[in-house]
Image (tube, rainbow, N blue to C red; front, side, top):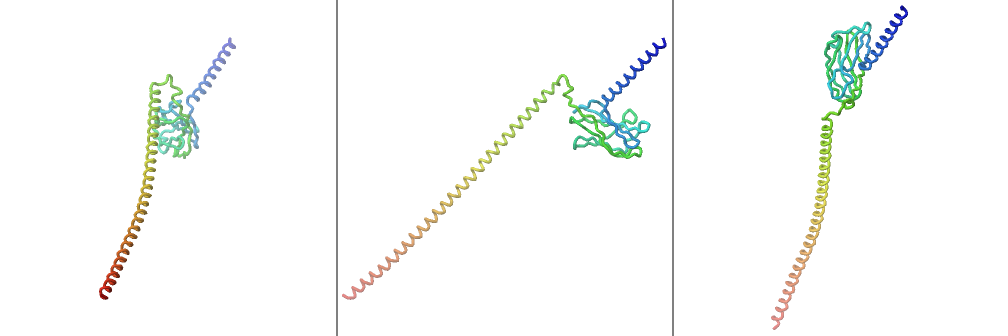
Length: 244
């Protein structure tokens, strides 16, 4: 009887231990918060709602406790600056106390999927804090949505429509630029033609002027020759009259 009771207790203990271990593993998977230690201060960072989904409201939580006895630290963020970082972009966060002692949080809507990290700088209970703690990746909400939201297809169609409009606008603008370039080339060619015509007219005018000057010169010369000839004729006739 005693052996049966001991065996039963051993079985219950084993099941309880297994449940606790599995429960801890489950909790760690569901709430995979990361902890960083600075001297005697532990800072645990994570998402309040996990998995965190892009485009959905969430809260970044920061739990502050002592490393020696794991006691929560009240009023820990008075001299602590918290900044959320995604790639090269950063956003300062205003941490406010939560219901649980030593727990602080800031609401945020993660706009992109992927890795985020919390950058912490300041002083907590006399301990200097300077470092960063990674957060769980933000997931794509469409991977967990079933069935697909009615607005998703309409949003895709709207995006497609906007893309088509932009493509058409760019094509029209390109056509207008080509037309303007062709008009500019035609205007430049017309200017060249006009310059050539003007040069030709100038050359013709110069030739006509020279021809007119030559004609005038010939006329003047003719008049002079006629006058000389007439003068000589008068002298000859005068001489003949004096003889008779």
